[in-house]
Length: 345
Image (cartoon, rainbow, N blue to C red; front, side, top):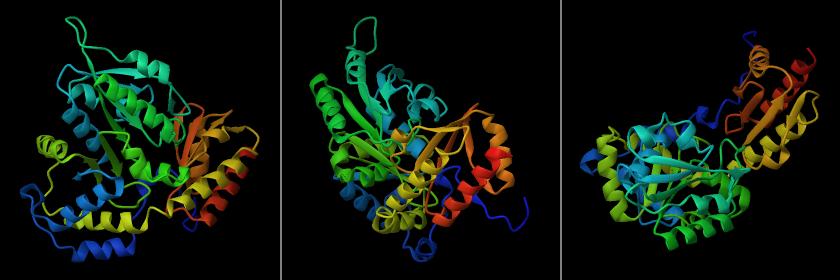
């Protein structure tokens, strides 16, 4: 790869850089000590995030993985059972933290394009007995990463939350990309959050912040979650320099996510026309494109990296591409051309 080859980084929306306005806000943010409860910028962000999803309050944490872990641990006691999708991020990509740290047993249900199978989910709920742990929490993921960045319809969330309330369970939404779901479906994020006791979302993906996630819920829950955050080493001091970016993200970066969705659709439609690639267009709903290749995904990755297009294989013949703020329309067009060249070389 020559020095003048452009880089189109499609590995993840976590690679986004903060905007110039975010960087300036970091310099001028009023700060305190968030562990002592007196960082005004963190407090402003937590209040704004809670309002945005219709919850009472929220908690700023370093990462999406910690947001899920803190939520799970706060909702449960050791030995409880939680329900997750077979391909849930908390199950596949968080180093076993529900079991290792929260000390809960996990039970899985299957989904179709990320939409939970209601009969399996309902059938998996168990009551505590002398011999079995009781189910206390359902964890849902919207958008659903491994399904392709797909959106769980609001109606499904409503049905699951109604079932959970009938059976005395809590619901947590891993909403790392809930604003992608909101933009794609044309439904306010607060409507999804209303179908759960808690919801978390990332600032550091499509919203372009360098660090951070929020857990949103009742004041009583967040008070307990704050203690768990401290236990896990997630207490931050002058965190206002990071929270300042989050304020800008919630004000200015949500609506522009539709541009990422348009770029993903453009990319998917072009890849589906290349011999040797197979794209399930039903799954291309937000900012992700998963596709199958007849050859080695690792070999294609190497060939494309030489052309300045970066991505990550997720299986021997399966690849994920993620669009984001730092991939322009021109970058997508360049990537398409590079894929076309690599496919015939």
